[in-house]
Amino acid sequence: MKRIGFWFAKAFAYLIAITPFSLLYLRSDFYYFLVYHLVGYRKKVVRDNLAKSFPEKSKEEIKQIEKQFYHNLCDVFVETCKLLRVKSDELSQHVTFTNPELLQDLYERRKNVFTALPHSGNWEWYGKLMHLASAHKATAIYKKLSNPYFDAFMLKLRKNYDLDQEDMLESSVALRALVRRKDLMNSVLILADQSPRGLESDYWAEFLHRDTCWFFGLERMAKLLDYAVVFVEMVRTGRGRYQVTFKMITDDPKSTPEGFIMEQYVRHIERFIQNNPDNWLWSHRRWKRSRQPLHQ
Image (cartoon, rainbow, N blue to C red; front, side, top):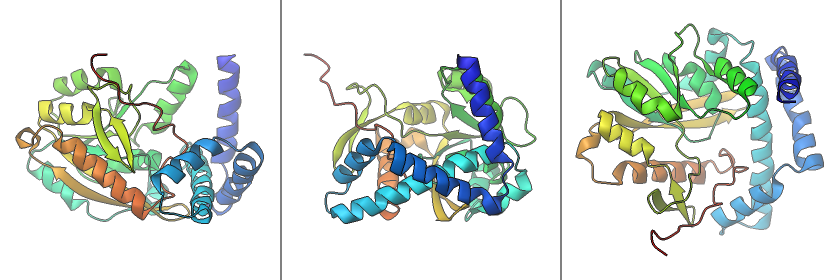
């Protein structure tokens, strides 16, 4: 069944991929009608997340953000499928890097870097083009999917243009792989806004008015490997148009106090969401965990 489902999904993705950009967003509008109005995909989750994150907003304002989020979600879906056929030079016309010199300066100083991107803008497009931002060896950390067919498909989809086979590292072996590659100049993409297990040992911080847990791996790896940490702000400027701005969190992680890197990352995301409330992945069950004491 897993294989049958995969082949059906793959054929559907290729059907979207051959759609020219001039018609791509008509498809997205149709999927928006299905997903939002007919299916109501995770609508209760999205509405609850928005209402609790923006208690100062009216029901009408929440509804407007909600609708725009679903439009964005469908855009990201068709844009991701489009990666199956679009070439690097064409895709690069849709994404603007405002200050790549920040990463290039790190490269010239022989400094490896973690680029920390939340689920905002189109993270798949950024991953496909991140090698254009600096001369670093472009690498991304990903979490393996349970379906082996979909996992292989997404891995192929995400690999950077014309780069070797080491540009994707599975999360469970990423640290060991980066230790082995210490002589390379790496720029490592990590999406660190997923929800961990919710243990007291995770990093906890108030985020959008709620106690929220975060994976501590970004900070721990940065300190262990002495990697700079840069926040990636990817703003949607129009349909199929994105602007990327790099913001330094630290270029000297070992000198920072415990929790500093994670706190700065969380605050960067929070400010981004407050300025671009429809541009985050609200359908994710981000607050399904509550803080538990170490000893009960």
